[in-house]
Each structure stands twice: as structure tokens, then as C-alpha cells.
Length: 353
Image 1: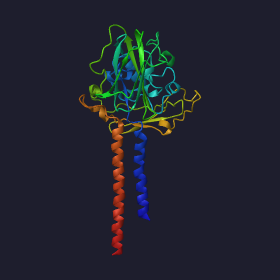
Image 2 (image 1 turned 180 degrees about the vertical axis):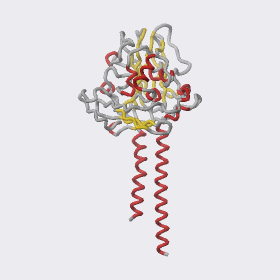
Image 3 (image 1 turned 45 degrees about the horizontal axis):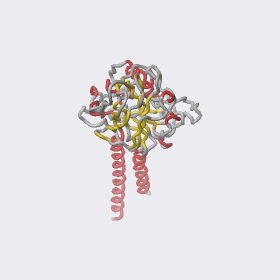
Image 4 (image 1 turned 120 degrees about the horizontal axis):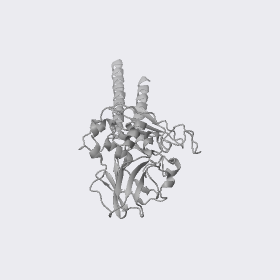
């Protein structure tokens, strides 16, 4: 009887980490941001999370802390499933409606990339972990300026470029196509990466200025992880993560498990599409329950990887760390069950003798 109970307990304990691994695998493995033209969050990360240089990046850190910059590749909604306009409120497009990244929505003199006024161009999207999906690039209508928050109505209704399942080259997606016609001066390019193997989507805002010359091709991505992996040796604690508490408009919550220096602090990010915390858009409540497609989403972001040198590969996201931890836990529990079973058999044999 005791042996059977021990084996049942071991089976349950073994199943827990495996189940957790299944839940996290669907959404924790795909991350990224626009590299050229560089996104707002990538530009601030390049300045250095602990010592940003521009006023807008300083304000972002003052509002949100440094952690969002270390999580530059996670401006996402786990269960978007193409419903971007429905679930991201106006004025919060750059943050994807997540309070954790709210500083990205602020008006100001953000880093601006100069682009030709016409012709073909290769945009690059830094991919921490490639996945199947499509990219849509939108541009603002004439008259938009950096002193305005980005709204859906400020964007042209149709993307000027869509690429399905692009090739990954040196850790980046290459998105080649024609620049938008008739644009000049200051604009915003809004990029949406919608996965097709998951409802998860990623978002980024890139400030650009169109004008002059023909199209040009970048010699290398403007934002490449191998160039940013060792930012000022920031392996130490990245400052506390405040709970995001930003309840999603559709009632779907988002839990981001952030491991600081091998530790772990759970950050509750009400996440997906924050608008009114009372769900006033009529599409849901604010209880912050379940994430991706109703199943919950746990992102692990083991930030010990930020100590990597510039020559190292992509920053290590938590999916790898979580997988190793869960595998180790499963092995330990299985070993314990085997030990109990063996001991019981020996004891039974002794009694029979």
C-alpha cells in the first residue's frame, strides 16, 4: 500500500514539471523586435538600460524601470490571433497595451532611422527564436509626428509590406519589398509579427524619416544581438520588477516569470491588451486570468544570460533555462521513486527470509 502511494505521488510530481513545460513551450520560444529600422525599445537597449542617454529612454526607465529594456524581445500578446486592432487600445500600440512597456508610447524625440523615399529595401527583424508566421509593416499617414501617440487611425489601413515565413539569416528575418509610396519626412513604421504556429504576436515601433536618394541595402542589421549581448556587464540584478497589474481588455492575463541572476521573481502582467482595467470596452473583464488561447502563458527570461560577451550568440531566453530546470526536476523525482521502490523490494525480501 505504501509503495503504491509513493509511486502515485512520484508520478504526479513528475507530471507537474512536464505539464508546465507544455504550457510554456507554446509561447516562450518566439521573441524579437525590428532591427532595421531600429525599434524604440532596441534603440534604448543599445543606449544601455542602466545608463540611457536620450531623454525618451531616460523617461522610459523612470516610468517602467530597466527590466523592459532587458526584455526588449517580449513586446507581445500571447493570444492575439490576428485581433490586433480589437485588443490594443489607441495610443498604446508601441507597448502592445502592456503597462510594463508603457514608456514606449510616450511622445518625444525617439531615435529616427533615415530611409530612402522610394525603391526596394530590406528590413531586418531580430529573431531570438524563429517561428513560422507572417510580418506586416504599416506606415503612418501624412501629418503624423513624434509629438503624438500612435493610434490605429494614424496608420495607413493596409500594410505596405507583408512577408510570410521569411528566411532567417544570421539570426534575423530579412523582409525585402518596396518602400511605401509618396512618403517624406517623419513617420512611424509599425511592425506586427503574427505567429501561425501559435496565437502569439509581437509588435514594434520604428521612427523613420523618408527622403533623398534611391533605395539602399544595409550592410548589416542595425540591431544585432551579437553586438549587444554584453552591455556593460549587466549580469547583476536588473532592479525589481514591478507587478504589471495591467488587466487585459479581454480578460486574458499574462504571467511573465523573470529569473534574475538564476533566481526567479514572478511578474504578473495583466498583459495582453490593456485598456481600462474594468474591461470597459465590453470585451471582457480584468481578472487577469489565463493567457495564450485561454491556457495561460508563462515566459521565463533568465537574465543571467546578459553577461554574455558580444561575440556570443543570441541572449538566452528563459525557455532553455526552464526546460533544463524542468528536466532536472523530472529526473530527480523519477530517481526518488526508483529509490523508494528498490528499498521496498529489499525490505520485502528480508522479511521473507
